[in-house]
Amino acid sequence: MRINIKRSSFYLGLLASGMMLTTTGCDESWLEPKPLSFYAPENTFNAASGLWGALVACERNMRHEYTGDGPPILTEHIFTEVAVEGTTDKSGPAQDMNLLITPDANLNSVNTNKIGWYWYEGFKGIKYANTVISRIDDPTDYESEAERNHILGTAYFHRALRYYRLTNQFGDVPLILEEILEPRLDFYSTDREVILRKMKEDLEWAEPWVPEVMDRGQVPKGAIQHLLTKVNLALGEFDDAIASASRLIDGGTHALMTERFGSTGNDPDRNLIWDLHRPENKSLNANTEAILMVMDRLDTDGNSGGMSSMRQAVPFWITNINTPNGNRGTIDQPGIEIDHVTRYGRGIGRLRGTWYHQSMIWDDENDLRHAPGNWMDMTDLVYNNPALVELGDEYYGEPLQFRNDEGTVLVVDTIRSWFSWPHYKVFVPEPQNIRPSGGHSDWYIFRLAETYLLRAEAYVWKGDMANAAADVNAVRTRAGAAPYGPEEMNIGTILDERARELYYEEPRKTELTRMAYIFANTGIQAYNGKTYSIDNFSEENFLYDRIMEFTDFYNKGVFTRHGDTYTYSPYHVLWPVPADAINTNTQGIINQNKGYSGFENNVPPLTTVDGNHSSTED
Image (cartoon, rainbow, N blue to C red):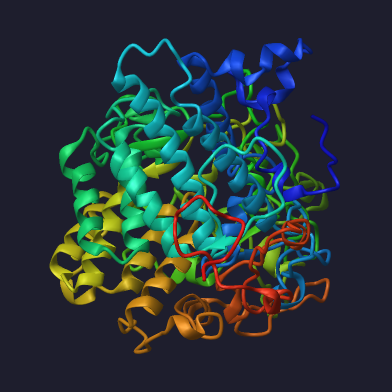
């Protein structure tokens, strides 16, 4: 069947492609032309190995959130209080949100944002999982019922992960529970809670069938339990969230890492936090904290070109900082006496940490996550330009300065070129590049430290502050910080600890929107004294109030060198559904979120899981 690409970009993201789903690697580029019949579903999915091959596509899809230039995970950060888009030399990057974040804007570009990536790639992941789910009884070579159910449980996980993300990024979205075998243009949005309740049902079914121990990069039981905890929280079912988190924390094979380990474990100049985030240590069997990983290795078929984490999250220190004498102070030349570029990477400051993340949350000087060597301040760098020696500039080798004695700012671009960053988290060696940007590495998707913080959050929602403090303190004290008392527990405390522990790991916008939904659905009073309602969710919500409370950009009219002002509105609690997905769905209606053009065409979302996506409920 030939498909007109211009006809429907949305269903193309959903239509199963036999060739893509039969790969055993992680990238289509390695495939050589072969007879199409080889890839026909009837020849591929009649064996268990064919279904496992289809799930590899889910794993690849999951990994791409963190790899390449301008990876999508940055977009999850810049819509929160921890970071902003730091590219200041052009219009287009997501800074003036009110102007640029619209349904018909470019929502999938390194130079803008990756909102569209999450929509289309989210539904691709659902497509891959649905192919396995729909064909689970095709193979004739299962060794046992347990093998069948293991595959099905893994597919349920991948589908639930995408829907958890989509429903906390876009709200109500189409619910698709089966493989799509022909073009469809009749999708309707389904109520967010209905979707999440179906995902909970699937995850609860999957949990007993997925083994506790799997190869790194595959889905173990702990990943099911961790995601189920998030879904339980999203549904406001806090007792169930505590129970699913407790099964993982207390009853499985995982434990927080509290002792030095791995290739750096004997380095006296480093510490446990450094060990935990070394690329070569993340997937070790000894690392009992790792739950779910994505794998990206140098010289391995299907790798993704590296993490580029230093390029994204390290300041653009290369050319924009002068000495007090007015000379260029820094240079990214490798192999010189003071070789900053090899040690810290060639950053461009795209993910610019806010003052909240750089300073406000750090309340204990003994916290290893903010300790010298792990955390970098600009004054930890020195003027390294060899030309300064020839010029007789006495500042060569001295710490960088923000101002000279007369108070003149020495930094050409204070947004992009002067901020602190978590070196231990984003430093990934790249030996094949003399100016490294961040090389290949495995990366944490789920880690037990987050499970503790999820359970702590559930306890806070229930008002059990003693148990909440115990879980937060398990993470804090491991990092060397002093414990909190129960009286210090609230959702803000949880978010602060998540910002310390999970920067460049967690999908923070997803989690903040999930919490905003909980406040709106329950009426629980927030730490700021306010209560919220789902009736005016897009006009007043916890996410917006938190960003306005803590950011030093959106609430102060900051503008870039290019003249673009940082703006943010309450309706950004949900992202716009890409206009193309709505406009090409000509026989149905995919709802747009309030605050964006097209909202006026919405119809009530579906409120049942019945497989009928071609009409609304009566």
